[in-house]
Image (cartoon, rainbow, N blue to C red; front, side, top):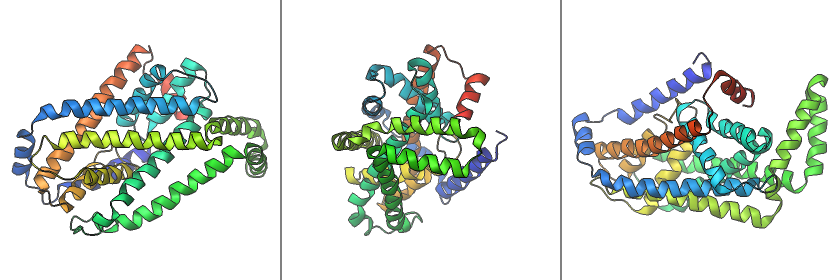
Length: 336
Protein backbone atom coordinates (compact mmCIF):
# COMPACT_ATOMS: atom_id res chain seq x y z
CA UNK A 1 0.00 0.00 0.00
CA UNK A 2 3.03 2.26 0.17
CA UNK A 3 3.58 2.07 -3.56
CA UNK A 4 2.62 5.07 -5.65
CA UNK A 5 0.88 2.81 -8.16
CA UNK A 6 -1.64 1.76 -5.51
CA UNK A 7 -2.52 5.29 -4.54
CA UNK A 8 -2.66 6.41 -8.17
CA UNK A 9 -5.17 3.61 -8.77
CA UNK A 10 -7.23 4.75 -5.78
CA UNK A 11 -7.32 8.31 -7.15
CA UNK A 12 -8.37 7.09 -10.61
CA UNK A 13 -11.12 4.96 -9.05
CA UNK A 14 -12.30 7.96 -7.01
CA UNK A 15 -12.51 10.03 -10.20
CA UNK A 16 -14.57 7.37 -11.98
CA UNK A 17 -16.84 6.94 -8.96
CA UNK A 18 -17.48 10.68 -8.97
CA UNK A 19 -18.31 10.50 -12.68
CA UNK A 20 -20.67 7.59 -12.01
CA UNK A 21 -22.48 9.23 -9.10
CA UNK A 22 -22.83 12.83 -10.17
CA UNK A 23 -26.45 13.74 -10.64
CA UNK A 24 -27.62 10.38 -9.27
CA UNK A 25 -30.80 10.39 -7.17
CA UNK A 26 -29.85 8.05 -4.32
CA UNK A 27 -33.44 7.31 -3.29
CA UNK A 28 -34.29 6.18 -6.82
CA UNK A 29 -31.05 4.19 -6.97
CA UNK A 30 -31.84 2.29 -3.74
CA UNK A 31 -35.39 1.72 -4.93
CA UNK A 32 -34.04 0.09 -8.10
CA UNK A 33 -31.64 -2.10 -6.10
CA UNK A 34 -34.25 -3.16 -3.55
CA UNK A 35 -36.85 -3.93 -6.22
CA UNK A 36 -34.59 -6.20 -8.29
CA UNK A 37 -35.54 -9.86 -8.78
CA UNK A 38 -32.31 -11.44 -7.65
CA UNK A 39 -33.10 -15.02 -8.64
CA UNK A 40 -32.03 -13.98 -12.17
CA UNK A 41 -28.46 -13.82 -10.85
CA UNK A 42 -28.35 -17.62 -10.50
CA UNK A 43 -28.43 -18.50 -14.22
CA UNK A 44 -26.18 -15.51 -14.88
CA UNK A 45 -23.55 -16.80 -12.46
CA UNK A 46 -23.91 -20.29 -13.94
CA UNK A 47 -23.26 -19.03 -17.47
CA UNK A 48 -20.32 -16.99 -16.22
CA UNK A 49 -18.65 -20.03 -14.65
CA UNK A 50 -19.06 -21.95 -17.88
CA UNK A 51 -17.10 -19.12 -19.46
CA UNK A 52 -14.40 -19.46 -16.80
CA UNK A 53 -14.16 -23.18 -17.60
CA UNK A 54 -13.72 -22.30 -21.28
CA UNK A 55 -10.97 -19.87 -20.22
CA UNK A 56 -9.25 -22.72 -18.40
CA UNK A 57 -9.53 -24.86 -21.54
CA UNK A 58 -8.04 -22.03 -23.65
CA UNK A 59 -5.10 -21.74 -21.26
CA UNK A 60 -4.64 -25.51 -21.35
CA UNK A 61 -4.63 -25.28 -25.16
CA UNK A 62 -2.05 -22.46 -25.23
CA UNK A 63 0.22 -24.36 -22.84
CA UNK A 64 -0.10 -27.57 -24.87
CA UNK A 65 3.24 -27.26 -26.72
CA UNK A 66 5.01 -26.80 -23.36
CA UNK A 67 3.16 -29.31 -21.22
CA UNK A 68 -0.17 -31.12 -21.51
CA UNK A 69 -2.15 -30.16 -18.42
CA UNK A 70 -5.83 -31.19 -18.06
CA UNK A 71 -8.46 -28.44 -18.03
CA UNK A 72 -9.71 -29.69 -14.66
CA UNK A 73 -6.28 -28.84 -13.28
CA UNK A 74 -6.22 -25.42 -14.95
CA UNK A 75 -9.69 -24.39 -13.73
CA UNK A 76 -8.80 -23.91 -10.04
CA UNK A 77 -5.63 -22.02 -10.98
CA UNK A 78 -7.65 -19.81 -13.34
CA UNK A 79 -10.11 -18.94 -10.57
CA UNK A 80 -7.20 -18.14 -8.24
CA UNK A 81 -5.95 -15.72 -10.88
CA UNK A 82 -9.36 -14.04 -10.99
CA UNK A 83 -9.33 -13.75 -7.20
CA UNK A 84 -5.88 -12.16 -7.33
CA UNK A 85 -6.98 -9.62 -9.95
CA UNK A 86 -10.04 -8.78 -7.88
CA UNK A 87 -8.40 -8.13 -4.52
CA UNK A 88 -4.78 -7.17 -5.29
CA UNK A 89 -3.62 -4.14 -7.30
CA UNK A 90 -1.89 -4.12 -10.69
CA UNK A 91 -3.54 -7.36 -11.91
CA UNK A 92 -1.34 -9.38 -9.58
CA UNK A 93 -3.59 -12.38 -10.20
CA UNK A 94 -2.05 -12.93 -13.64
CA UNK A 95 1.38 -13.41 -12.09
CA UNK A 96 -0.10 -15.31 -9.14
CA UNK A 97 -1.56 -18.02 -11.37
CA UNK A 98 1.72 -18.32 -13.28
CA UNK A 99 3.59 -18.73 -9.98
CA UNK A 100 1.12 -21.37 -8.73
CA UNK A 101 1.32 -23.24 -12.05
CA UNK A 102 5.10 -23.33 -11.68
CA UNK A 103 4.83 -24.66 -8.14
CA UNK A 104 2.31 -27.31 -9.14
CA UNK A 105 3.32 -28.34 -12.67
CA UNK A 106 6.88 -27.04 -13.07
CA UNK A 107 6.04 -24.71 -16.00
CA UNK A 108 8.32 -21.68 -16.00
CA UNK A 109 6.74 -18.38 -15.00
CA UNK A 110 8.06 -16.69 -18.16
CA UNK A 111 6.41 -19.26 -20.45
CA UNK A 112 3.14 -19.07 -18.50
CA UNK A 113 3.14 -15.28 -18.64
CA UNK A 114 3.65 -15.42 -22.40
CA UNK A 115 0.46 -17.49 -22.76
CA UNK A 116 -1.39 -15.19 -20.34
CA UNK A 117 -0.38 -12.12 -22.34
CA UNK A 118 -1.55 -13.86 -25.52
CA UNK A 119 -4.89 -14.49 -23.79
CA UNK A 120 -5.23 -10.81 -22.91
CA UNK A 121 -4.34 -9.69 -26.43
CA UNK A 122 -7.03 -11.94 -27.92
CA UNK A 123 -9.47 -10.73 -25.25
CA UNK A 124 -8.72 -7.15 -26.26
CA UNK A 125 -9.26 -7.93 -29.94
CA UNK A 126 -12.64 -9.55 -29.18
CA UNK A 127 -13.69 -6.65 -26.93
CA UNK A 128 -12.92 -4.20 -29.71
CA UNK A 129 -14.80 -6.42 -32.16
CA UNK A 130 -17.83 -6.17 -29.86
CA UNK A 131 -17.52 -2.38 -30.06
CA UNK A 132 -17.07 -2.35 -33.84
CA UNK A 133 -20.08 -4.59 -34.42
CA UNK A 134 -22.17 -1.88 -32.76
CA UNK A 135 -20.50 1.22 -34.22
CA UNK A 136 -23.47 1.98 -36.48
CA UNK A 137 -25.85 1.96 -33.55
CA UNK A 138 -23.32 3.75 -31.38
CA UNK A 139 -23.19 6.65 -33.82
CA UNK A 140 -26.91 7.24 -33.27
CA UNK A 141 -26.66 7.48 -29.48
CA UNK A 142 -26.72 10.85 -27.79
CA UNK A 143 -23.44 10.52 -25.92
CA UNK A 144 -24.81 12.91 -23.28
CA UNK A 145 -23.25 10.83 -20.53
CA UNK A 146 -19.79 12.06 -21.41
CA UNK A 147 -18.22 8.70 -22.33
CA UNK A 148 -19.91 7.68 -25.55
CA UNK A 149 -18.74 10.48 -27.83
CA UNK A 150 -15.09 9.43 -28.02
CA UNK A 151 -15.60 5.67 -28.08
CA UNK A 152 -15.22 5.36 -31.85
CA UNK A 153 -11.84 7.11 -31.82
CA UNK A 154 -10.66 5.08 -28.83
CA UNK A 155 -11.82 1.88 -30.55
CA UNK A 156 -9.80 2.67 -33.68
CA UNK A 157 -6.66 3.47 -31.67
CA UNK A 158 -7.14 0.43 -29.43
CA UNK A 159 -7.60 -1.84 -32.42
CA UNK A 160 -4.33 -0.64 -33.88
CA UNK A 161 -2.53 -1.28 -30.59
CA UNK A 162 -3.94 -4.76 -29.98
CA UNK A 163 -3.54 -5.92 -33.58
CA UNK A 164 0.01 -4.53 -33.59
CA UNK A 165 0.91 -6.50 -30.47
CA UNK A 166 -0.76 -9.61 -31.87
CA UNK A 167 1.21 -9.26 -35.11
CA UNK A 168 4.48 -8.98 -33.17
CA UNK A 169 3.62 -12.14 -31.20
CA UNK A 170 2.66 -14.03 -34.36
CA UNK A 171 5.92 -13.08 -36.07
CA UNK A 172 7.92 -13.99 -32.96
CA UNK A 173 6.18 -17.36 -32.81
CA UNK A 174 6.61 -18.14 -36.52
CA UNK A 175 10.27 -17.05 -36.63
CA UNK A 176 11.64 -17.94 -33.18
CA UNK A 177 15.28 -18.15 -34.28
CA UNK A 178 15.23 -14.72 -35.92
CA UNK A 179 13.44 -13.30 -32.87
CA UNK A 180 15.96 -14.89 -30.51
CA UNK A 181 18.92 -13.48 -32.49
CA UNK A 182 17.33 -10.02 -32.56
CA UNK A 183 16.55 -10.21 -28.86
CA UNK A 184 20.09 -11.34 -28.10
CA UNK A 185 21.54 -8.32 -29.91
CA UNK A 186 19.26 -5.94 -28.04
CA UNK A 187 20.08 -7.56 -24.70
CA UNK A 188 23.82 -7.30 -25.34
CA UNK A 189 23.53 -3.64 -26.31
CA UNK A 190 21.01 -2.39 -23.77
CA UNK A 191 21.59 -4.35 -20.56
CA UNK A 192 24.56 -4.88 -18.18
CA UNK A 193 26.70 -7.89 -18.99
CA UNK A 194 26.22 -9.50 -15.58
CA UNK A 195 22.49 -10.03 -16.18
CA UNK A 196 22.71 -11.25 -19.79
CA UNK A 197 22.40 -14.95 -18.95
CA UNK A 198 19.34 -14.39 -16.77
CA UNK A 199 17.55 -12.16 -19.31
CA UNK A 200 18.32 -14.48 -22.21
CA UNK A 201 16.89 -17.39 -20.24
CA UNK A 202 13.67 -15.47 -19.58
CA UNK A 203 13.45 -14.50 -23.26
CA UNK A 204 13.85 -18.10 -24.44
CA UNK A 205 11.20 -19.37 -22.02
CA UNK A 206 8.88 -16.55 -23.08
CA UNK A 207 9.31 -17.57 -26.73
CA UNK A 208 8.48 -21.15 -25.73
CA UNK A 209 5.18 -19.80 -24.39
CA UNK A 210 4.31 -18.46 -27.85
CA UNK A 211 4.73 -21.87 -29.51
CA UNK A 212 0.97 -22.45 -29.85
CA UNK A 213 0.75 -19.44 -32.21
CA UNK A 214 2.92 -21.12 -34.86
CA UNK A 215 -0.13 -22.87 -36.32
CA UNK A 216 -2.84 -20.83 -38.11
CA UNK A 217 -5.34 -23.41 -36.89
CA UNK A 218 -4.28 -22.80 -33.29
CA UNK A 219 -4.61 -19.03 -33.75
CA UNK A 220 -8.12 -19.51 -35.13
CA UNK A 221 -9.04 -21.83 -32.26
CA UNK A 222 -7.83 -19.34 -29.64
CA UNK A 223 -9.74 -16.53 -31.33
CA UNK A 224 -12.99 -18.51 -31.59
CA UNK A 225 -12.64 -19.65 -27.99
CA UNK A 226 -12.18 -16.02 -26.94
CA UNK A 227 -15.38 -15.07 -28.78
CA UNK A 228 -17.28 -17.85 -26.98
CA UNK A 229 -15.88 -16.71 -23.61
CA UNK A 230 -17.05 -13.14 -24.05
CA UNK A 231 -20.42 -14.12 -25.48
CA UNK A 232 -20.97 -16.23 -22.35
CA UNK A 233 -20.00 -13.28 -20.17
CA UNK A 234 -22.44 -11.09 -22.11
CA UNK A 235 -25.00 -13.78 -21.35
CA UNK A 236 -24.52 -12.98 -17.68
CA UNK A 237 -25.18 -9.30 -18.43
CA UNK A 238 -28.39 -10.41 -20.17
CA UNK A 239 -29.64 -12.54 -17.27
CA UNK A 240 -28.90 -9.85 -14.68
CA UNK A 241 -30.72 -7.30 -16.85
CA UNK A 242 -33.93 -9.30 -16.33
CA UNK A 243 -33.69 -8.60 -12.61
CA UNK A 244 -34.28 -4.90 -13.35
CA UNK A 245 -37.04 -2.89 -15.02
CA UNK A 246 -35.43 -2.14 -18.38
CA UNK A 247 -34.64 -3.89 -21.63
CA UNK A 248 -31.91 -3.35 -24.19
CA UNK A 249 -30.74 -5.65 -26.97
CA UNK A 250 -28.10 -8.35 -26.57
CA UNK A 251 -25.94 -6.32 -28.96
CA UNK A 252 -26.21 -3.31 -26.64
CA UNK A 253 -24.97 -5.51 -23.80
CA UNK A 254 -22.12 -6.72 -26.02
CA UNK A 255 -21.19 -3.07 -26.51
CA UNK A 256 -21.38 -2.42 -22.78
CA UNK A 257 -19.29 -5.52 -22.07
CA UNK A 258 -16.64 -4.45 -24.56
CA UNK A 259 -16.44 -0.88 -23.27
CA UNK A 260 -16.37 -1.65 -19.53
CA UNK A 261 -13.74 -4.38 -19.92
CA UNK A 262 -11.55 -2.13 -22.03
CA UNK A 263 -12.00 0.57 -19.37
CA UNK A 264 -10.86 -1.83 -16.65
CA UNK A 265 -7.42 -1.94 -18.29
CA UNK A 266 -7.00 1.56 -16.84
CA UNK A 267 -5.06 1.33 -13.54
CA UNK A 268 -7.49 1.54 -10.63
CA UNK A 269 -8.14 0.32 -7.11
CA UNK A 270 -8.46 -3.47 -6.72
CA UNK A 271 -11.72 -4.87 -8.08
CA UNK A 272 -11.87 -2.30 -10.91
CA UNK A 273 -13.88 0.04 -8.67
CA UNK A 274 -15.18 2.94 -10.70
CA UNK A 275 -13.54 2.01 -13.98
CA UNK A 276 -16.15 -0.72 -14.44
CA UNK A 277 -19.12 1.22 -13.11
CA UNK A 278 -18.91 4.66 -14.72
CA UNK A 279 -18.60 3.44 -18.35
CA UNK A 280 -21.33 0.84 -17.77
CA UNK A 281 -23.78 3.44 -16.48
CA UNK A 282 -22.81 5.78 -19.32
CA UNK A 283 -23.56 3.22 -22.03
CA UNK A 284 -26.94 2.31 -20.55
CA UNK A 285 -28.02 5.93 -20.08
CA UNK A 286 -27.01 6.56 -23.70
CA UNK A 287 -29.52 3.83 -24.61
CA UNK A 288 -32.22 5.68 -22.69
CA UNK A 289 -32.11 3.73 -19.43
CA UNK A 290 -32.84 5.88 -16.35
CA UNK A 291 -29.63 6.74 -14.51
CA UNK A 292 -30.81 5.28 -11.19
CA UNK A 293 -31.79 1.99 -12.85
CA UNK A 294 -28.55 1.89 -14.85
CA UNK A 295 -26.52 2.52 -11.69
CA UNK A 296 -28.41 -0.15 -9.72
CA UNK A 297 -27.97 -2.70 -12.50
CA UNK A 298 -24.28 -1.92 -12.96
CA UNK A 299 -23.57 -2.16 -9.23
CA UNK A 300 -25.38 -5.51 -8.89
CA UNK A 301 -23.69 -6.82 -12.04
CA UNK A 302 -20.28 -5.73 -10.74
CA UNK A 303 -20.84 -7.51 -7.42
CA UNK A 304 -22.15 -10.62 -9.21
CA UNK A 305 -19.04 -10.67 -11.40
CA UNK A 306 -16.68 -10.02 -8.47
CA UNK A 307 -17.94 -11.94 -5.46
CA UNK A 308 -18.58 -15.56 -6.62
CA UNK A 309 -15.31 -15.97 -8.53
CA UNK A 310 -13.35 -14.31 -5.72
CA UNK A 311 -14.81 -16.65 -3.12
CA UNK A 312 -14.19 -19.70 -5.32
CA UNK A 313 -10.63 -18.57 -6.03
CA UNK A 314 -9.97 -18.07 -2.30
CA UNK A 315 -11.37 -21.55 -1.63
CA UNK A 316 -9.10 -23.14 -4.24
CA UNK A 317 -6.08 -21.20 -2.94
CA UNK A 318 -6.74 -22.59 0.53
CA UNK A 319 -7.33 -26.06 -0.92
CA UNK A 320 -3.97 -25.87 -2.70
CA UNK A 321 -2.41 -25.47 0.74
CA UNK A 322 -0.95 -22.12 -0.30
CA UNK A 323 -1.31 -19.00 1.84
CA UNK A 324 -0.76 -15.39 0.79
CA UNK A 325 2.46 -15.35 2.79
CA UNK A 326 5.42 -13.00 2.52
CA UNK A 327 7.30 -15.61 0.47
CA UNK A 328 4.46 -15.94 -2.05
CA UNK A 329 4.03 -12.17 -2.21
CA UNK A 330 7.74 -11.72 -2.87
CA UNK A 331 7.62 -14.42 -5.55
CA UNK A 332 4.75 -12.63 -7.29
CA UNK A 333 6.42 -9.23 -6.95
CA UNK A 334 9.69 -10.58 -8.34
CA UNK A 335 8.00 -11.95 -11.45
CA UNK A 336 6.00 -8.82 -12.29
